[in-house]
Length: 570
Image 1: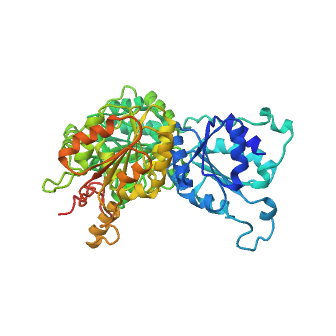
Image 2: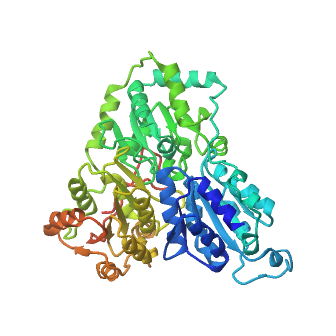
Image 3: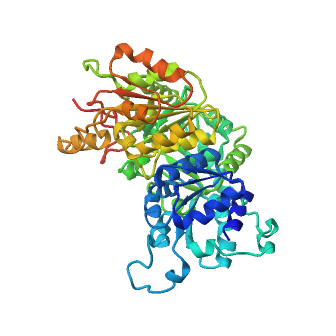
């Protein structure tokens, strides 16, 4: 049976599997090796899961993660949740004890060594989770997983695979490739039936004096980047993105104001608050994007929201005038077919004021009186050294994540951003950077990580060293768990457990794994050490000692509407 499943993987263009090995998944691992599927073995289940997740995010195709039962399942839960909340297609195959044990003694706590109730644990954070108890289950569920993972809003599918079912012997007829259905293709989207909605949206766009185009991760997935430019030009709109939408529009474009929300750019948030028409393409408008004061999200305008997830559209957090359940690419095509020739009258003074706010660069202003390196200064130097090089930026979760999103330049096809959004997982960084490098051979990966986040999966330095990949790790080291510390200081004026976070010698640890590493402590060395760090091929780590008092500023706090933001500690 394992051989048949491996053939399904092969037919669905799976060239490699990501895993941490164990006994109850060993038959399937061996079956994959037997037909030439490459094994990417990591130092932990979480590392394997995040590498597969990054690979899937960049390619748009489901990737396979395989772990053993029990601790293998519980250790891979974070990547699974990340895939679910950030809409990443993933197939998680978990080993399980034999069906003979699963069918009996259901009243006891555990029916076999390393048994966990995998389906019960994973069902709330997957599109489907099932335990395959028979041949018929396998024939149905495995091919179906590849279809389901990319159908509609993408996401992970979990297959729990008992050991005895994996080891079943099949006849040659049952093993033939002709018996394996090809379900990898996506179903065509259907154009919205209600043409009146489109007509209303186009009319509102044409009449708008303060139009704003908001692009989310769904816009990245749709990939029609030239059409977003054309829509913005047609509407005379300023452009903003969600946090996960960063990279869907050239961040150096004069009409791009930044990303919106909790740690968004001041100009982007202000534009959304003051606009009279907001067109949202592929963003779920969650609390990190809208803030908590939802009644005043767009107080003097209307919102048109295009998305493929019907559940999100029917349960909005904010007031929505037009809800359109449609693929973004199809919407853009239909929008142009109706919009052509329409010209509105723009509030030029407002438009220029938004660009003026953007030009003031109030985000993370360096503390001139500090003797420490400042986050913005470091990243601006890095950006200058990098120039227009093609690369993928991967971050962990914390202050560094938002500094990286704010102060580096992103452009479709040139520089993209991978980060953990909805689940917000520290430790996403290093294994995802490895997965990104595997997915895009020849393209450099820049992993920007905080000292706290790096420690979560630091063992994957071994996986990076094993593969000698071109991954550059920049550690923004403030000896502080910055985001939580900042929240504590704003709220209670103290930051227990987070404000004095002792960091190890990351350069020495990296060298112990055979990775070239250095430490940067002073402004005098900034340009020379950044240049040296970037110039060499292969893996490298630079541990940068930054100001421990540096916050993410401005920030949208609880109780503030989108037109307001906290401007920092004194």
